[in-house]
Structures are given as C-alpha cells and as structure tokens.
Length: 121
Image 1 (cartoon, rainbow, N blue to C red):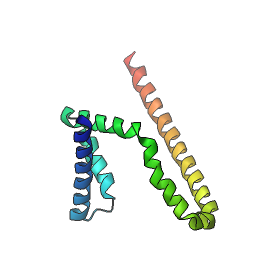
Image 2 (cartoon, rainbow, N blue to C red):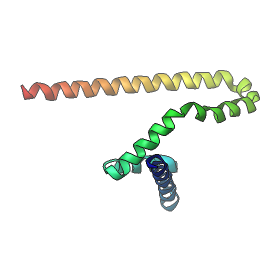
Image 3 (tube, rainbow, N blue to C red):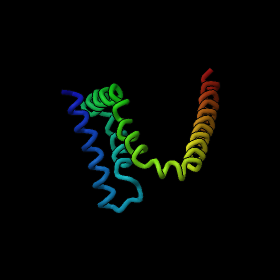
Image 4 (tube, rainbow, N blue to C red):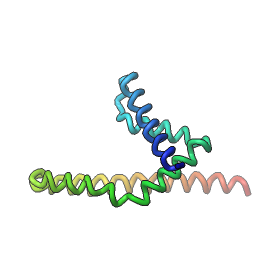
C-alpha cells in the first residue's frame, strides 16, 4: 500500500511540474521540474517513505521498462540503420562528457573536503 501511495506521489509531483511549466512558460520539461519539487519534498518522512517504496518497486521491475524501448527500436529500424553511426557517436560522446564532468566534480569536492578537514586538526 505504501508503494501505491508513493507512485501516486510521484505522479502528483510530475503533474505539479507540468502545471508549473505551463503556467509560468518555463523552458524546462515538466517532469524535470517535478523531480526538483520531489527532491525538495524528500525532507519530509511522509513523502520520503512512500517514494522509497515506489522506487524499490520500480527498480525491482526495471527490466520490464526496457520492453517499450526495444519495441520502439524494432519499429524504427529504418531510422536506426540510417542514423546508426551518428547515434553511436552521440551516445559515446555524451557518455564521455558525463564521466569527465563527474570526475572533475568529484575531484573538486574531494579537494574541498580535504581542505576543510585539514583546518579541523
């Protein structure tokens, strides 16, 4: 029952994000705004516990969520064959950029953490 409440909360946050984007004409996708709202809402236990239960349920069945993507790829094989090399290049490049940004951010945070820890001694 908690997972069902969590799924309802996730949908409510997504709908709230969509509503804010439409009302304020924001240049962001509604679900992204909903996730930011959810992030702020995770401070409260009455939101955190159902959201955690829903996340665990979704993660337990994550492999089922790839079925629609696989069907979409099979449906559009002509596009994949036409733009396949470009898709692979974009996927590889964006993965490398994401890994580089993550590494640089981690390095900066570790240096900052080490600098703060040195002042405590």
